[in-house]
Amino acid sequence: MNEKKKKHKTTTKVEAGHCFGRTEMILNCLNPKFAKKFVLDYYFEMVQKLKFCVYDIDNNTYDLGDDDFLGELECTLGQIVSNKQMTRQLLLKNKSPAGHGTITIYAEEITDNRAANFQISARKLDKKYLWWTDAFLEFYRQTESGWQLAHRTEFIQNNLNPTWRPFKVSLRALCGGDVERPIKVDCYDHRFSGSHELIGTFKTTLAEMQAEFECINPKKKAKKANYKNSGVVCIKQCQVEYTFLDYIMGGCQINFTIAIDFTGSNGDPKTPQSLHYINPEGYNEYLTAIWAVGNVIQDYDSNKMFPVFGFGAQVPPKYQVSHEFPVNFNPSNPFCAGINGVVEAYQRCLPQLKLWGPTNFSPIISHVSCFARQAMQQKTASQYFVLLIITDGVITDMDQTRTAIVEASHLPMSIIIVGVGAADFEAMEFLDSDNKLLSAPTGAVAARDIVQFVPFRQFQVSVSIALAQSVLAELPDQLSSFFNSYSMKPPQSFNVPQSS
Image (tube, rainbow, N blue to C red):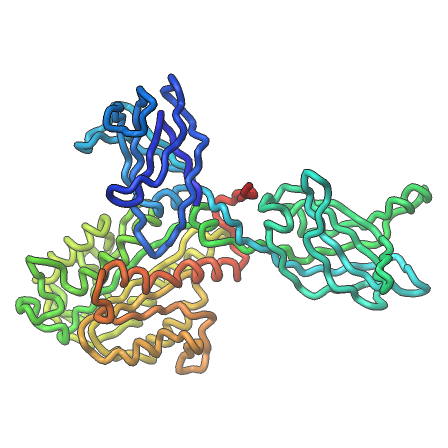
């Protein structure tokens, strides 16, 4: 990551008491723009806390104790990358506004890991040896010193209408990450001597590459007045593979839904032995799991309103068993404001329920799938859905759950299952098909692995941090690979410049 800071002189703290770096000092300016950049390692599955402190420097000493403190901002790296450009009010130590001062922080991904997938053919190429041509292509990117070779295809023997094998080229190699940078493509007739003969050439950009281009041979064009071309190169596919940060910084929102197991096997919530016991001295396993996962994901949802559902309980007023009820008892608006709102709704809901059964997952999976299916109607990768299921027992609707997961694998959606308590979670391990894709009872096979299961009690130290890292580490790849497989672009596409 790469952040830039704004305001007089700024320091960045990544942990208590540790100063990560300082910007340069800008003299006599109330609206400074700092050139100093800070490079940080970004981890989606972690809450990476940052503090930006702004000072008015009056001397040349390194110690800031005798300088005027103008304000500070505490935030997370996740908040910065999900906004791409974030402006916030500066605060004093007592958290009151520091006058009208603001700080603007920019982020960019300095390692461009994107690639472009190509499918290319040509037609009516010039004959170069009797009746045939052994054609291949060379792609060049423009640099300050001239054209630099980025990729060469294989040569196709004896064919004036060749189709080359699909290939992939990194954007850094092809255009330095800039989709508007010129690209030159040369088409040659292959010679084993190494003295390949030019058939024709054309120039384009990555942004305009998926098209047909006339191959122009400069020598023939200069000699023949009626010269048209030396063939046509057809770029059938030029699909850019975007990274997770491309999608997030391009405006993709992660929609987080929580499903809580309220079946009778959890035990009476009034007793300390219950997994739902509200311990005045700390969180139970359900609340710890909600905090651990939600605290990370909330940075990637702009409105931080999370729908929360329960299953397996008898619900007022008629106390009928429900496998999909809002914990705030408001079906038209099941959203809770932030993770604090989720905790409050859970604590208010629990005393009003009768814990019952059975343990059915398929209704809530199908519920979230409906919204993910609607999101697929949009032309861009604007929404991705994450369902967190926290449960203590064995699934009783396994066949229906398998079917629901297989169907959801074709949608912008991932499922996280956290097993609490000491039950047998073998069925959960089956759903988390790391070695073999899950199949439905009908034989239909999942398009991809979208389930991540972890038993809560395998974590003994730093439980919240370790749990979040374990269940969220696969999510960035699940999101980016899904949208790339459907050729869906970020809502707001942008260039990633080549780092110096």
